[in-house]
Every structure is written in C-alpha cells, then in structure tokens.
Length: 299
Image (cartoon, rainbow, N blue to C red; front, side, top):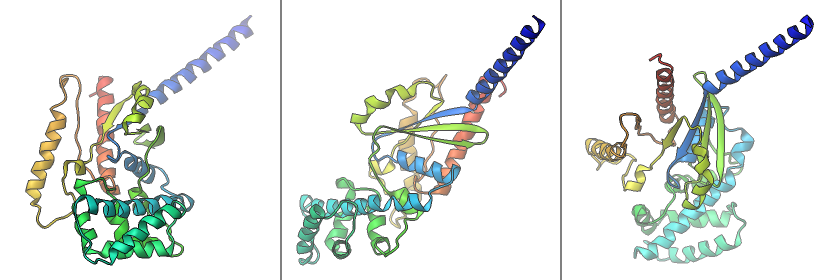
C-alpha cells in the first residue's frame, strides 16, 4: 500500500514537473503574425530572421535561388519593355526594338529560371538603352519588382560561370507566398514562432485562424507603395523625406481606436538591410519583454 502510494506520488510529482516545464515554455513562446499586402516585404523579413537568428543560408540553399533570381530578372526587363508601349516611350536606339522582339520570343521558348547567353546579352543591351532607362525611372506608374534595378545592374555578375547568390541576392529575390510559412528561432530567452502568410486577397481565408493565441502582429507596409523614393537622391531634401515618412506613420497610428488598452509601435526600416532589421527587431523584442513583465505585474 505504501509502495503504491509512493509510486503514485512520484508519478504526480513528475506530472507536475512536466506541466510546469510546459507552462514555462509556453510563457517564453512568442507567436508573431506577419501581415501586409502582397510584395510589402514580409517574406524578406522572414529571410532576415534566418540570417540573423539562425544559421543563415547554406551553399546549397543559396544555389536554389538562382532560378528565382533569373526569373525575377527576366520578368523585370519584360515588364519595362511592355510598359514602354503603355507610357508611349520610344527606344533611344531604334535597333533595340528588334532586341525587344527577340526577348519576348526567347522568354516563351527557354526553360523557366534559366539564363542562356543569348538572352543575357539581349537584356544587357536593352538595359543600356536610354528609352528603357526612362521607362524604368517611371516605375511607379506600372507594376515592377523592387529588385529590378538591383538585378539588371548586376546581370554580368549574375551570369558568370559558377555564380553563387550572395545573401543580398537572396534577400532581394521575390516569389509569391502561398499558404502559411512558419519560422522558429530563439532570441533573448524567448522562443519565436513567426508566421508569414500570403498577402494576396485569395490567400487571406487560409490564414484567418492564425490569429488565435497571437502575442503580437507585425503589419508591414511598403513606403514605395506611396510613390516615395527611398534610395539616395541629391534632389530629395532629407528633412522633407522625414516629414513625409512621419505623416504616413501618423496615418497608421491614428487608426488605433483602442489606445487605452492597445499600443501600436511604429518603426521604419529597409527590409534588405540586415543591420537595420536587426536593430528594429531587437527593439520589437524589448517591447514584447516589457509587455510580458507588465502582465506579470513586474513592470
């Protein structure tokens, strides 16, 4: 009888210990939901978490991005060529009209994600054309990947034999997110579960259940969607730029109708700048820790 009771007590203690461990683990688990329109930069932030808080990208993983990078580059130059007709822009060199036709033909015949020399040569010639550059300068008037200029300016490097994508090449690659992608990592004694969901409207019904048990929502909006030039430009007054950014920031903060119980924190960052994202996420984590301490009555 005594032995039986002792065994039961031992099992009870083990169960209590397990429950406490699970409770401690749950208390340290932070569920982050990334929200924002398609192409706002959500997936780029997830890539940054892998670089900053995990082991980054292995050689094999980097090589897997080559087909995506080539597809992005081809899609970009094709988008510019098509927009020239819409915007009534002529080629600086009339001979490039023939190259544009060849480009469209090759795009239909080559294997997706490849970059034959004939194709890269045509793209390089087109990219140098003054008409193409004029159309690129008006990118806010049509749909163009944010990475277009980066890849097209660096195309000679991208098509070198033995090319291995850099972290920056990987960060700037764009592929539509479908479904839900979960990334797990640890930072400051917290276990993060970050969920990246498809930003397109057709994807939204798939992720509505992700709101359950969420610690915080990170809503991402692309400033480029507001026709703002964020690259260095001698003609843009930094003070004027800051005023524009602050105005947009205020529009989001003013949407908070429950300020007495819910706080919204705003940060401006560049999704492809690893150090900048690292700094901002560090601040976000400190806010989460502070809120957790508040809930425990310790702050």
